[in-house]
Length: 385
Figure 1 (cartoon, rainbow, N blue to C red):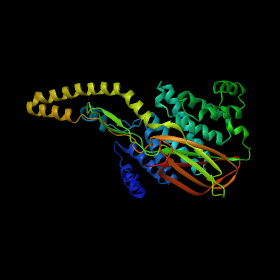
Figure 2: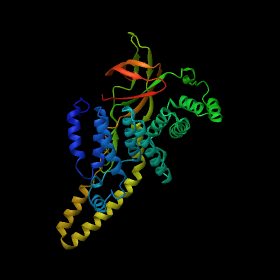
Figure 3: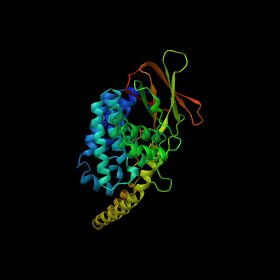
Figure 4: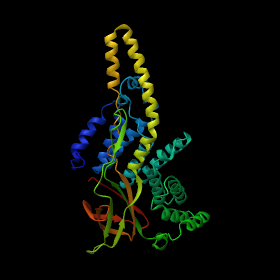
């Protein structure tokens, strides 16, 4: 993989060529292209591509009738790729995060509203929790908090907690946002529930700023043909050496002044596997229907030409294989580091660590990062090994 070997220009050029083709894979290729641009640090270009993907995903007539017929008689790969619900939410999350990194908070808020609209649509359709993206909602909370919209931030943190209460940072987030939103009853309720959890921000000087680092770890799982039946897909995890990161900020001394460790916000690998497992009953039903349709078509041909009908039946059955398309450039997980610090300019190091906490080859040095007083500075990094 070119991105893994840091051949960014080559990867971007190839994916850009694919994304320009108006075929059934265009939405997927736009998602991949936007991700590659983001990994390359080209945030403005990345957003232009993600906006195209967002628009394409919303087109009502995107799934054509002719392609449905072709997929029924052939392979599901002939269907236009529409993306999973959590993938479509991630498009807007990446748009918002790119805008925050470029300092365009108003534009980021537009994407927050898009995320909320999509979530309401998912809820109104009676969809399952696994189809949501906890990271998209959590990022909305961060952006609300950055804009000092504390009540909205609290609501988004609470919504994230209902989706995934296992996120380690949420107890502190709920305590802090409830206090800032002046929701006394909620604050007391969370204090009773999270016994022993403290809100460090209570003791932080209001003149301080905060670094919010969003870390994307490794690579998500990839689809492959099932060992039992090649007509169905399975997901194969892509194991990463780097499990998390440790961040250090230096204010002029040789030793770090402030440190932080990443904690999980979104397990994309688990989300992908859960979604695929839930889709199996739908896939089986579709395969049964397709099998019957193919037999009917083959029989109609056989009535006119016995040999041709037999060949058509064989060809249609052989062409029936699993759809292996997925957004392959997504990370395995998304993690976060929050470090409150006095305003000023710092040197930052991001060190990848393995599951035992030992340093890995993944490392990033930022010679100068400005933290403004009373504000939050967003920074994102992706490890590729």
